[in-house]
Length: 99
Length: 383
Ligand SMILES: [Zn+2]
Image (cartoon, rainbow over all chains, first blue to last red; front, side, top):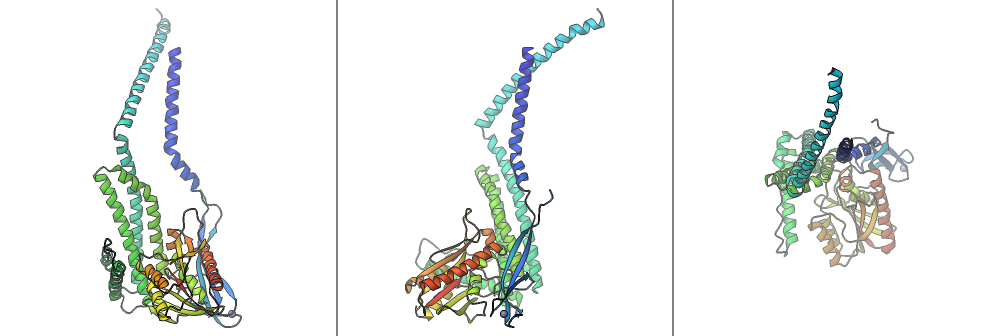
């Protein structure tokens, strides 16, 4: 009976050792799987259009071919030139991603 | 004897056999464990195993790099045919692997900058000639953008070749340290390659990138007005006024992808003015440390320009020749951000640095004085 008990502990020790080994091997994967549940982000190109004379400014979606300094019309307030003053990427969180 | 009697006798024997068998297994296992630990501790086997693991990791990342290169090639070919270049893939093949630059001799420092500048100009003009021949009379912005796209693809090609070189070298000589080092650096390299690959979209669509911070500040200072003249090849000069101070602004000619020759332009301008300049302010994007925030603005002394030498030294020389104080205003960002379309955070940094430049002008330059502001960086998407 004593031997039988010894046999059990040995097997148990081996199983525990194996489980720990498996855990160590899978740990990086587990961590990356846990951290990759990030929010989905929508990127949008925004363009700031402003008047050269007054402080009129408005932002709109970027149009292909536009660049900073391009004249895109006239000011609704005083009729001076409207130019693209800035173009940048705006990131908007889009709620939780499905996983 | 009954059948049942046999059973009752046989059962205990069976148990005993199992028990003695298990202790035998256990002792075998212990011996095995001992042997394995001996092998693992006193031989090269673990390193060989690691070599295999790390090399397969590098190979996987290399596939990703190659995919990026193929993608970049496809995009650049599409862009080139969209601007009217015939046989764009032939043009691409003719560019990649050629047009390298051999650095001048450095153990003899006499006139090294002149030699380096000469080599850079010669290379630049041969690239320009190569593109101009196939592009015909297209706009200069298109010409600059085609050049940049070709350069980006050849950077990706070079990166792939280098990674493959070190991997094959490591495997050839069983140099596991080399392969391990390569594997550890791979994520960073992939990130940089991705930045280059993504920059093609910005360059072909003409969207400002993080590195355009300097030109954006320059454009803000002159209230988005047109240039007064081209002072150096592909480099514009603007004139404006801030609270009674005369401001000269230098930036590359846009809106194509172009950095111009800011050092040469500054040198020319200051010489033209006979050194009558009260202050030089350089504005540029700067690489941030990991712990720093993107879009942070910092102020210091010196020429803010990420140049290999000639342009930067031209700025320093002309400033010290006439003892003009030279300031640096930088917008911090990562390498990836510097090459990607400008984000809102960095744009806010650009606005902050514009305000800082104005503050420096107001506080450190007397009324009626003259200031030169140099907006250093790639002017893609900024005219
Ligand atoms: Zn207006």
